[in-house]
Length: 104
Image (cartoon, rainbow, N blue to C red; front, side, top):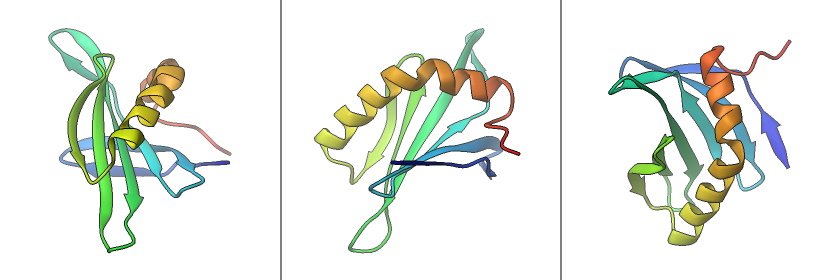
């Protein structure tokens, strides 16, 4: 089950756009397009509430699939996210280019 969003929020001067919420309440958002060494990149943020309070949080850069940080997600979670990204990277870049999902 997925719930799609179009909400925009800002972090450290970069725009992030909500992409999808998974059934386990993991929220996935992507950044706007960034130029890094003349190549287009985006960052993808994963967040999920923790039973103990606070959030699990991780961020991955595409197209390199380099993990920028991971706080509290398991290796199994990260493996799932990597598979998710491999199936969604092209769509994430598409939405990043046009300013997020445009929902009427």
